[in-house]
Image (cartoon, rainbow, N blue to C red; front, side):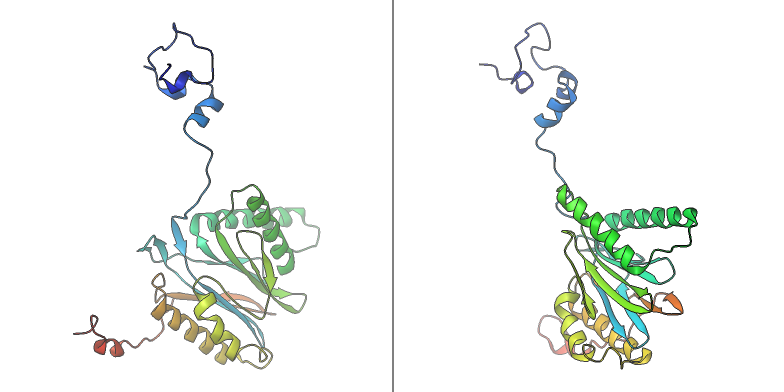
Length: 263
């Protein structure tokens, strides 16, 4: 019986590498060598990840927020990750999930905008165009069984119309008045539905910021992958604005009476 895997599936040749003294990848053609190491695999578990994105419509436009933590598993490794990306003059793309895949998407969008600028044909990509482009990119990668592990929120003003859409790693899409990804889909969505839906044409900017901060505060309390360091984004007809990092006030005195936590 031939006990050497490098010889399986091909005629024996006793004069060449009889005892597999040369590394396997040197004794086989590239295709066979790769199959000998196992099947081709794709990303199954992202490494550096970001958590929730919150976005909703208000009277003058759209408000968004995210924290700035990049988690390496359960380690709060990077504390200055910007997950709100301006695209053009009236669009912001926010991303949960794998940070490296998000950086790849940023590169694609930057290349696309440069190409459109160089065309100089008087046309500008609007929010809906960017939304459909990302939809195709995500679905294409999903179809290759090599998805980009992100949940994307695309927000902007397109032809005087407020637009808020969602795309996930499978290419699933929807549009809504309020969108939350990550843990925010469980913890912030009830708050947004109660305080925003049905009132999106009445909410002022001050109230919108209050709602946004309340959602991020709840996420910081309840999501172990969150951080009290946030960025907010605002899109109106005048353009877009992404804030500097800031924190919200928190209250932890109640924890003193919890057995196993307090003194």
